[in-house]
Image 1: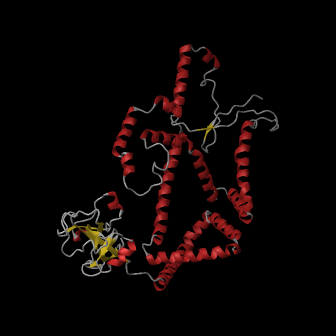
Image 2 (image 1 turned 90 degrees about the horizontal axis):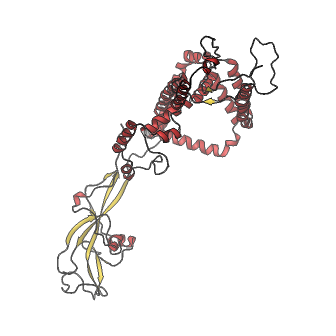
Image 3 (image 1 turned 180 degrees about the vertical axis):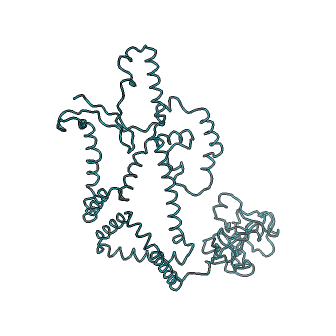
Length: 478
């Protein structure tokens, strides 16, 4: 028997056609021998060019020839529109897909196009598996679906058999077909007995990416297009069903679900070993597979659709009633107390000068504060009306109130080098050592002398604390 040679096939599920070429259409070996050197050179060049076109995603070819000028210009234009450096420098929420966390090539239209062509040429095996799985679940061949049901039953009853599935799959779907490809059966008209003994009669079967001009390439594009649409539909339907009950847009319903899940987690944490998980997995498996039978689906849609809808409505009404009676929500927004410090300044060289209103600041700007030590000026607003509540909060009362307990906030912050007024306007004033003070102008007026302050004089800054209530903003439902 002559050796049989099989061509390599692409990763699609269509059978390999057997083509018989008539003698008149096929070029003979003698005609090839009579071709001149120029014709053979043309054929060789055309074959190399065809190979390059069939696999444009080769990294070697990409580095050697690069991208076209129009592709590079368009990529540069996109980089100018969306510069990565400016985006990464902005104060945006953390994104784990940012280039700060991964070392991957930046966006490039030619690279994306090239990768899409390579991906589409190799994705056929995924769609083959998808089609076969759909045929199993839809009972196209009942014997295959029943076999799957038997396998699932054994795995559910004995989960340790799950470790055998990858090995059996490698044997029956990879190794045995590969061996049969190297030892093909004889033609049907042959009367010889088929045997697997002897040397291999055909080359090993290989899987090549689909060529860009082949039917398989366009079939992959069709399947990829439909898969993207199916994913978008399932994604939107899943979010539409799951998100409203779980995102606390309806706080009563979300609180009820949280309570049920917490109770279920607590029960399972204690008694999960008492639950017959194998029986439950078996019931789920049988329900899922038998539910895909056309007759079962038709029966459910004809007779039980209305009943299922009625039961869903009853369950929803019961849940709403239970939620409205047993779930108590806080209707009053959270309130907090905020503070601001009124800061006044006076030149240290002129002790008789009146205090000058400076600004309102969130920090007291005490002598040992980081701002004072680093030499920075205080930051804030000049007018009381410009003081704004924190983000996400609003004012809870109409006006600011002077904090009369100056000693308390001073002690809480462990402020040192100051003098506290326990009566009057409640100013907290800086004190400076007499050795560092400017004594060109003597101290007069209400301020105490250095003898009364253990060798210290009144400094150039003083502050007092104002407080006001704020409450959380209530976001209206859309």
